[in-house]
Length: 186
Image (tube, rainbow, N blue to C red; front, side, top):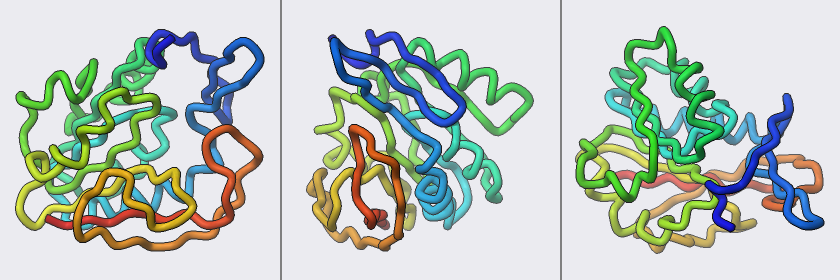
């Protein structure tokens, strides 16, 4: 069953779903320092920001704390979409787009900063090749890095990494003491 077809459970510190005998965490509050660092880098040149994946809205809040012109968020999970829309209410520089980023890629603009953190995205294999078409010259991008090192899953050239010490609880998606934040500039 695809991620977007899963029924999610929302708790204060995490979003997860349960398969036959396994709890699959989608996002957890321990990621807050990573989300803050990701937002800081994605907003480092200001301007227009694209965020692919809303999750718990942690990174969205950090993005809004920076001096930016616009903030476009794409979310595809039907249970998270209403939460993203409620969060965006009263924020005139925020646009929520629902559905798959890949399905609407041709209608997207170009952005000064991009942050990609889309859990269970079947189209993630296209992110690396399409990234240059989403980022303005001089713009920057970062993404969630599940690897415990500088492995570049998306095969994006000229990526640098900044290391952060983290202390996640045991979970299904990241169990390492160091997070490698990818940084790319066009």
